Each structure stands twice: as structure tokens, then as C-alpha cells.
Length: 571
Image (cartoon, rainbow, N blue to C red; front, side, top):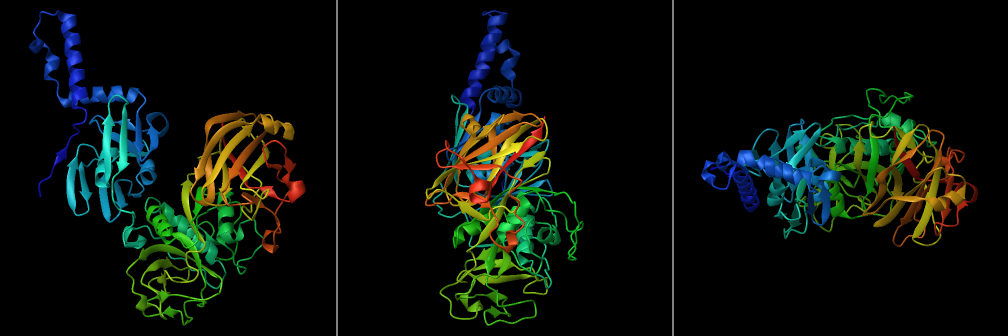
């Protein structure tokens, strides 16, 4: 097979003009009577002038618009390399090109979309595209701890057009593919080294914690291979439940977003005893809730992020039990009925062609999720089984972790909602204002806020009030962020600018939130039942308002805490 080396032609005109300008400048300096052929710059090669062109481009405002999402060199770290390829940070590729992106062993990169796969390696011009190989002048690059890939190469192989505007110093990338779905018909995280280790909950009711941590571990794979403690999540949270009382994904989310965990399994093994005072080894900053029965979005979440926690109604009690809904020979399960979910599992893949005959009963059609249980490897196929798309409950409740960071991302978390999203409140309309007041622990910069979107297409605005002195101060707020979330979930929003606060200073984080078709859009923590009996209202000072002008204290009038967190770095 013949290999091709592709060098960009899009700068030819610009390059010639630059060289001509250099020649003329030199000629003017030496005297107009000299022949241009005597100028040694006339023999410059691309290796000489390309770095000069790249330097000129990088010194200006450089932008790339990928399907109308704009990224810049100032805010996102894009740059033009010395081969005149526009390089984009790897952490932007997944969302901008809507694809699956994962690093292996810190040296190899796998990008997947549709049924296509691209493999790149550090210091290797060769790129494997499905079963063929091709050479490019630039591929995967690492600078310090950040990875970059050439925007045009990715665009050309994933069905995008690429155009460079020399006058605007901007690249425009547009999806031109006719494909309606980015997904293959079959996908299995086990085949890509992204399936988490199978857990064994034993005879305890900790499936909710085991499945949630499996999803979290999967999100970090294959770059990081961590095994997190089910014991710590099920015993070290702020809820009043034991390990035999069960739980749900909102409890997992509360524990993780409060930075109570995760901790490693080796530091708190599964023995029914809590090892106290362990610091989290990761900070969960974002998790999305996929809409009920949206099978395509569930698959997309598995494809892009990793395992998705979901719930089923299981008539099986353990690895040795039998059920009319489970085919042991094919490890296939499907319940159709009115019972509600009672067991959590992790979706690690799917097969659209998985035959309906593999399941007991007469089903409407083919297709199944590939699910990982928490009953050890003796169950199913080494802990894995199939759940039909036509199962009554699978895909109703779905959680995927989409933002997990190292623990040095912030120094301080300000919060009063250790039990997280227990309920919702509002003024019978889709919009509400909320504000939480905190006291700065150090001389810090406020950098971000964390809160829940309780429904799809939630719009938000975030403000900060310095030197808070009573609820009248809330009118003196300054806007620091705004945007919109496609899915419900927990999100961390970085401020447009850092806000300096001094130790002992009171400040407030104000949130305006608008959730279409909701009458109670604000997430709150309150004593709803036995599991939330430990909710502490004394640790918060929160206010709500219908218009951002007239405020009421939420602890006094609603017996609740607002789920609005703040994050700071010491200065």
C-alpha cells in the first residue's frame, strides 16, 4: 500500500506574499539595483518560513469554529504548529466533533465515530484509519501535560469540511456527513479496555453504590485504572441508611459532588466497616442524567464517556437464583410488567442485532444493552449479561459521569447540601432565583459554582455578591457566567473572571435558573423521609426570589437548603 504525506496547501498564497515581502525588504535595505537572485532568502525552504508564518498567526487572535462552537488561542489553547497545522487540545475534541476520544498508556489515541476508528501515536506521523494507514505532517502531540491533534486531519476523517480564512485568522469546520447517528450498531467497552472491574456486593443492598462507582471507574478508563470503595460510598455518605437499606443514584451523586469521595478500595475495603477521614482521590464536577427511555442518548453516553448507571426490576436475588425472565444459557434478561426498579446495573455497551429469541417470552424486536452486574464474575458471562431494549425499566433512570478532575482543581468547596438533590421548589413557574451566602475561609479567588439542572434545556445565570451585608446586598450582584444545559444533572460552571474575597468576608453566589415546563426548577435538600433525617439546616444561609428583587430565607420558610456550591483557589 502506498503511503501519502500530506502537507497543507492552504497557506501557499500567504507564504508567497510573506517571502516576497522579505525579499523586497532586503532589496530595499541593500539597494534597489541589486538582483533579487543575490538575496540568500530566495533559497528559503518551507522548514524555514513555516515557523515564521506560524509565529505570526499565533501572535494574533486565532480562532476555530467547529459547527458554530468557537474556540480561541487565548481561552482554549489552540495554536498553529510549525507544519502550519491548526492544533486543537484533546479535551475539546469529544464535544466539538461529537465523538469518542480516549488515550491509552499516555501515548496512543483512539478516536471513534460512526463505524470509523482513528489511531494516533506520539512522535509518529502515521495514522491508522480503520484498516489503512496514512502519513500526515502533524499528528498527536504533547506539550507539558496537554495533548493536541490537528483539526484538519480529524475533520477530513470524520466527515467535516475544513476551510482557513487568512484574513480572519480563523478556521471553519462544518459537519457535512449525511449520517443521522454517530453510533455503530454494536459497541462493547470490554473490547476497548474501558469496562470497569466487576464488583461483588455480596448479600448487602449496595448495588446502587457498586454500579455508580463502576460508571465512575469506566469514565476514567483506559487513562486511569482506579478501583473505588463501595464501602465508603455506602457508609460514608450523609444519609441515614445502612448497607442493607438500599439506595439510588441521587445518593451517589450527593456523596461524590460533596467531595466525600471517592476513595480507593484498597484504603477502605468491602468489609462493612467505614474507614474514616479519608480524602477523596478525585473531584466529581459534572454528571448528566439521561432522559427516560432515550436509548440513543444512553448509547451515546456509553460511547463518549463510559458506563451508564441504570435500574431494572430483578426477580433474581443472587448468582444462584432462577427467574422466568432470565435465560441462563444466553445470559439474557427481560422483565415486562408493572413492578418498579429494585436493582442497579451498569450499561457497558449494546447490540442492536441481538436476537429477541435469546430472551424468555415473545418480545417486539431485537436489540439489547450489555450490562455489568455487581454479583461477582460467577454471574452471567464473567459478571455481564444482556438486558432487552424492551425491558420495562431499563433506561428509565440513567446517570453518566462527564466531569471528573484531580483534587488540586480547587482548594475550597463551599456548600450546605451534603444530601444533594432531595427535592425541588419554585413559584409555579419555570424560573427562580436562589442565593447561598458563605464566609471566605482564606484569601481566595472564587472561580466556579456548582448546581443542579432539574430538567432538559435548563438556562442559567450566575452572579457573585462581595461584602454581603444582608439580603439587600443581593441587588448588588455582578454577573460571572451564563449558559444552557442540554440534560438534567449536576454541573460546575467556571466564572468568566475570578472574584477575589478576603478571609472572613461574607459573599453570596446567586443563581437564576430557568427549566422549561417546570414549576419547581430549583434543587433543594430537606428532611423528606428516614433516609434524609440527618439533613442539617443550621449550616446554610439561603434565599429564593421570584424576580431577583424580593427575597425570602429558604431555611425559615421552606425548611430547606439550596443546592448551590462555590469553588475557590487560595491566592
